[in-house]
Length: 504
Image (cartoon, rainbow, N blue to C red; front, side):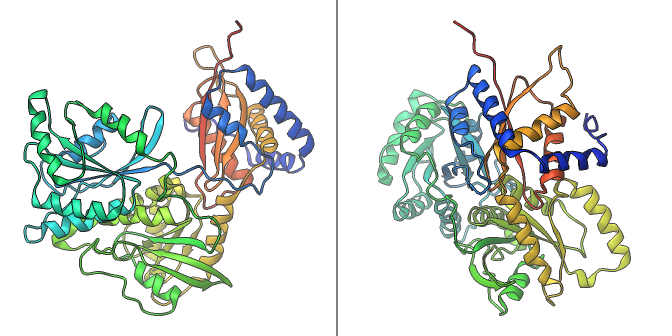
């Protein structure tokens, strides 16, 4: 399936690029307007109409998709936070185990309820330390609370409030965020009186639920939606000012060295205890004649006795840095094999929709043998980000640092790119003519209309009469890159299958 659309020759690519470059823009605009009018004969929902209202032929019209609100789920280990996350998502995504501090690769999940979308931050994965559990819990919950619009504070109704719960409550009060107190493990009506003891925490009405059985969760979500903002107040992207760069990578890959080299001075960016620094450190720096803002995440170090907790903090802080950044530089250590952890960091950047530059660090320490193996690893493990600019640097010595700025500029330019609606529909028409979608179950899906819904990252919406094969969607994305570049930027392509309105 993946090769079904790969037989187009380079000559045809060149012809297509030339035809699109010489396009009569006025004619293309008129044609796309006609396609847009024809779309009114199909069943469209409110979200469709919102997308179509934003249709523009102004290539400089930068638009963001609004940031979805963020809900943080906090509470002691083993109160059922992950079970509640899975119940709300309607699928098993968060790891549920009896061992407190279970390591997890992801902490943020996309959820929705009654057609409202939100992001759920599961703050499981604490590593409680018997000596200072209150401090450990509070430090970790604090980061999550900072990054959220609303907090769900989960307490085990069978155990009742503990001193740790009270420590978290003090912090929640200071945060000023809306808080829902969840009395979990109320599996039937007989256990409801136990939830009443949680009034003593002073957070108002406890919501009795059973994450395991789903009891009370629907009512809870209905109430939360009444308070939750429609657009996030914390994850709003800033507009204007110096471009914002996050330096990411697994521990000990050279993030601190890179920032120190860029800033031109030694700075202490590593704390003794992973996750105790609430915000990544920001630095305004002049590079290549421009001012940049570097969002540093180097305050994370893996410690043997804190390895699980540190992984969790690293993931949460990486997410925090990405929320603030526009482009991420992912640092890879060329002296070591590309690891799963490296790929997870890269995938986080793609999921966040930020621009991406890959920086291969410690290049001064590589020999010919390792270089050959590295090329093979890049081909195998990083094929899905072949579009990201690559720079070979040494953060310690400063070698080739001047290559970083052009790579950042290229990635950001791609991230900002907007294709006029007329041009995009002409592009889709050319593709369909060169390679019509295969007939499936006696029907051939037709593309009715396409538009770029937003930039940062470039997000395209295509209205069709039927489901487009994943291979055909990849074909559209690949051709978009071949014709328009988009080097360093992820591309989102979503489909809306719509049926013709029945005449009454």
